[in-house]
Length: 238
Ligand SMILES: NC(=O)c1ccc[n+]([C@@H]2O[C@H](COP(=O)([O-])OP(=O)(O)OC[C@H]3O[C@@H](n4cnc5c(N)ncnc54)[C@H](OP(=O)(O)O)[C@@H]3O)[C@@H](O)[C@H]2O)c1
Image (cartoon, rainbow, N blue to C red; front, side, top):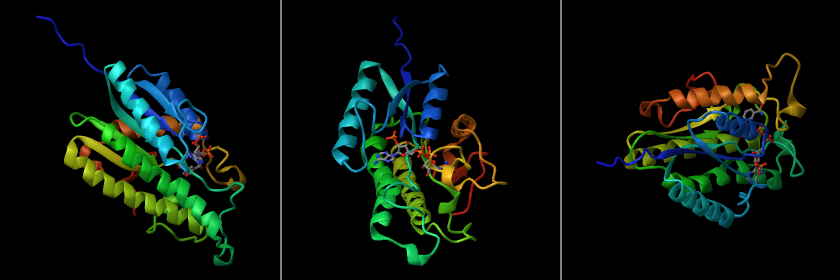
């Protein structure tokens, strides 16, 4: 009797050109468990959150990869995010609130990942364990907010956390073994954190943060779906 060979496992990193995203791709590629796919603004195909059609095209490409490699998408990590740039800086006071900055921070931190949910969560298999991790931030926790400031970034990540929670419920209806979480990577040495790295703050190399997050994702159970989890595996308050 001929046996069907086991299907390969694919891991997809979105935001692969960022500090954390690149480290995630590197670490996943060094591990034989998954075949790794990487998407970002500079990959082929490219994705840009300001262009939903690019997400739809990229999801079609991932579907083709699964078919041609006889593989299932078992791990999705979304490592994109925005804090500062030409669109503006995080606000220290309500007097700094700016509609264009707010639009951009919500476009990249909230609406982009929501569109990733729309186009990529349906690609996860309906049976067996699969994991989707959306990199968020502890400063998006409303319960943990004691310092104030960073209105737009905090609010965009709080909204992302709610989207992750909502998607986790829908995903569990399709596959009771699926896990969908928001992740806090800690403070990581990347372009995003660089202008704000204060002395005394523990800033970790991206490779360390990536390996911690992958270990956390590997250990999560379906009972933990819908949570905001940090790089040590601790559940954080909303
Ligand atoms: N660094 C920290 O200390 C820290 C702390 C807490 C949370 N985080 C979170 O960790 C995640 C990774 O951030 P990072 O530190 O690696 O920052 P980074 O190096 O600045 O990376 C930014 C990321 O956002 C993506 N991105 C930006 N604009 C985009 C657009 N228009 N469309 C699609 N993707 C876009 C980039 O993807 P491509 O370049 O591939 O297109 C890149 O992956 C973010 O969610 C961030 O909020 C970071």
